[in-house]
Length: 396
Image 1: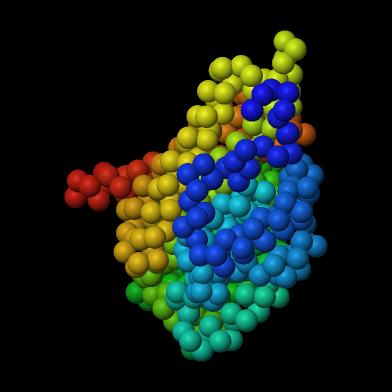
Image 2: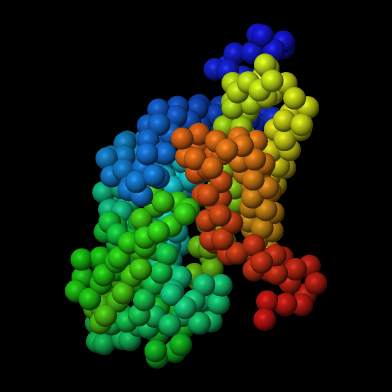
């Protein structure tokens, strides 16, 4: 294609799927992916930068998200894990904050109920959760506990007749400033095991305060939670959440979703960088006509495609019930490392315009830092993988 004939609104490989991984989806899944992609392009991406700049969540978007029906595509709707992953990548591509909102509500919160609640509890809670009539959050990380929270949970639970009394604090809890429920993980004083509880955020003693001054995921309403003698009926203790090993069943799956976010973030960087390179002129010609710029674009694309290829195979293993914790750990570590490189290249390609959100890349660059850190840091996921291949733990 000649330089003069480039149509910036109809560039080749518009979906960024250079190796046609989407063709592995069924026809029904491909149609659904196209529908969701169109929704995200129409409803989410146009408002993303403004919401991020203001640090405010677009509450009027929730009914629209409910209508497009994205919650629990695998368990409830029968789609493949590959489809679910590509949907999460597409949501991230449109806006990382909205994808994180969905990841918290659908993956961490809903995933806890689906994996750890009794059938009676699921019947009582899931209909409103699936329809987004009730918004959820996931309370595991603490002010003094991140990577070591498995063995160092300080929030406590004490049985008192037909109730449990919770005390402690949680930090970095997405959605918590406006959620209806939070799954709180707390250490049972009787047996020292971490257990899970469905907590109504209107209960006395529960408070959530927005964390200010973030440079990443500014639209996400992360909160500091304090629990002071919060009394929870025994029915709201998750029946299957009786140790941190149970909690890890949820984290293994959600770690996959975060790795898919790293794919989506790279596709977002590719979208913005490529369009800028085609539109922007320097020395009388498009930036895209310079060899080094094309090299940068190809590096971003290569990182995204290699990350996507890893995630496609891991999703297939998950569908077959064969995915392992260490595979999720490697995927999260690898894809986020490639993502960090990709967004840095994209930011550099835009020059000075890469540090203002007007051109989107600055937001993409900043949001990548949160993805790099949550759901297990790069270092911890690396060591989980290292333990798997050597049989020796080097974590502590």
